[in-house]
Length: 378
Image 1 (cartoon, rainbow, N blue to C red):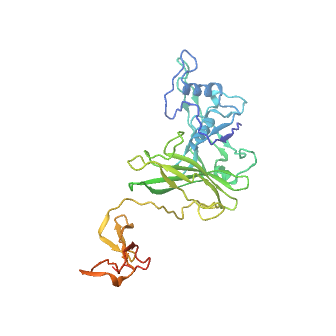
Image 2: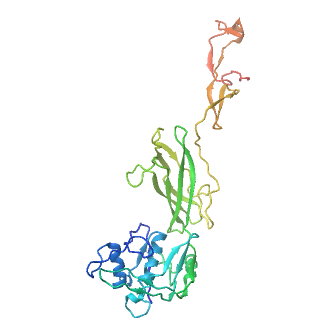
C-alpha cells in the first residue's frame, strides 16, 4: 500500500523530465552498465531500479496536465504493489495510463498486458513488466491552511476512482473536472475607429476572511497592441483582482483604467475605463452560487464611418446633423442666428436680405432659441 499526496500551487511547475514508453523522447541507455546521463532517461532508470518515486514526498502541481502526469508516474513506478515494504522492478506497472478525456474527466486504464523495458544500459538486460491489480482509496482533502478537512465537490469528482481496479479492460473515470472561471470579450475602438477585442477572464482564487471571495482578473488584448506598461510580463496582458463581499456584492476591483496602445498607427496611450460596478452594490459584477454568465455589457466606442450625403438634416437649434455609415449621428456644424434690438429698423434690400441701420442696432450672433432668438424651421 502506497499513499501519495498532491498539493496545488498557484505558480507554474517545472516537472522533472522522464522517459515515457508511450511516446516522446527516446530512451538513451547508460554506458557500460552504468545509469544513463540523459536527464529523462536517468529519472526513468532511477524509478525502475532504485524506487525513486516510492517515497512520501508531496507532489506539487499547477495545471491539470501536471496532475495527470504525476498520477501516471506514481501508478507506474511509485507503488509497492506486492506489499514487501520496498520497491523492485517487479512492482512496475507500466501499462497503466492516465488521460484527461475530451469531456474533462480523468480516465485511468490498467490493461492486463506485459511491457518490455528498453535496454536500460549498454549490455544490460531487458526487463518484463507485468500488470498488477490496483486499488484506489482517496482519503482526504484539505486547504492550504488545513482548515478544510473535506471538500464535497472535489470528493464527488474523484469518487469514481475509489475501489478495486483489477488488470483488464476496465476503465475508471472521475466526474468532469471543472475550473471556476469565466471569460468575456469586450469590443473597444481606437482613435482610427479600428475595433479590438478586450478579453477579460476571471479565475476564482480564494475565500476572504469575511467569507467573501476573490477572483483573479486577467485582461488581454491581441498583439501587437499593448496594455501592460510595467515592463514585467507580456505587454498585452494585465493581471488584476475582483473581490466580493459575503453577500455577493462587489467589494473592489483593480485595475480601473488601462493604458491602451494599439500600435497600428492610431494614437498611443488611450485611456480605457473599466466600469464593472459600484463597491457594495449589485449593479455590476456580482457573486452568486450559480453558473457564471454575462447578462449585459456596453461600450461607448464605435468604428469609423462615412457621412451619408442623403441623410443630413437641421434641427430647431440650427445643428446640422449628419448620419454616418456606422449608425452614429453627430452634429457636424451649427448655423448661427443673428438678432437686433429693433427688427423694424432693419432696411430691406431685396431677396429676403436685410441691412443693419442705426435704428435697428448692431447684430448679435448666437444660438437659435436663446437670447430672444427664434428657433429654426427646416
